[in-house]
Length: 380
Image (cartoon, rainbow, N blue to C red; front, top):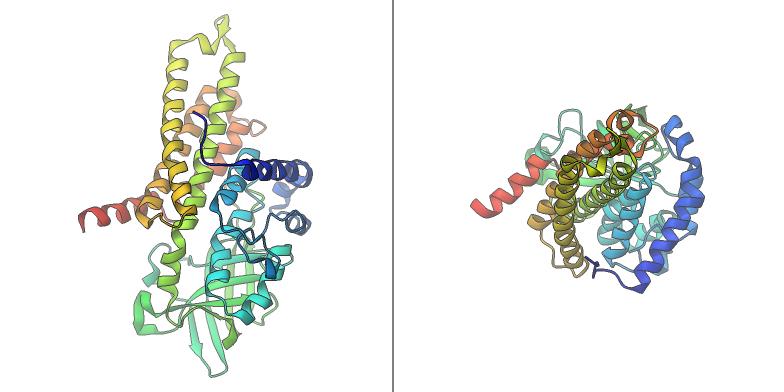
């Protein structure tokens, strides 16, 4: 089925992204995976190409276009390329809205130009060793000291944690407030007491730096409060729908790509004197995955269109996130199986997609949390 979502401008942008990946990312990606981190030059190259800050107003160096379909193109092409390490989706779609929607004019002038040029790499720090989706469990504290906040605590599983120059930290500013006593504080590289732990060793997405962060009596200026005091819960809930949509878009793109390369593989690979594609079981497997991908794509494209129009709600974003990522996981497993022993070799894209994609049902809110959100909306 021909997609109805994009127009000529989106198609031209897709070609730009593909050219960027071929020139600036793929030739270096194997080395980045060995290093456990991408080159800062790649971020600068993305900035020069106009891939950062797509929705940021032009006066700050951005693209000035909030159309989420451009973000969807980026997510699809980076997923097809297997280039999760250069986390432009995190930068643009997750952190960008906090800076454009909550920052003061002074903060925007201070942070957004570097955000768009690639000179300022960003991260958001919510998860702690003892608190993930449950915001009430956050223990990181920020004590009001008059002209600054005194920040203490630790975070873990922070994407871009090693490279980040600017980190939005969720901290408890009113201890008795529970989830409604949290605020967003912006911590910048070089602040005394801000330390990075080890670059965590993951089973996949090896080029994506994921770190522990430590805050020991960090003096955060009052002018680095982002949004309302004690308003983090509302701010986080407002922006989670877009985060989940970005993950869902990558999920269906990964499933479609895996189906594509596996279909080609079973046509070429022979067993018992004939191509695997001639076996009824193989044809049924391909037929099932193709149907599931087609149905999911229709729903996802509708969600993308609704989000671009500003009408997508959190419930449908949660549906998209859990369904697309669980499909991705299921397709990755079945496609690896159809590759046989070769599917277990890291030189094959299906093996890399299997390990890189496994996190999709976990970060951004687990499948179980997504189902809880949907269930509550239906059952109260």
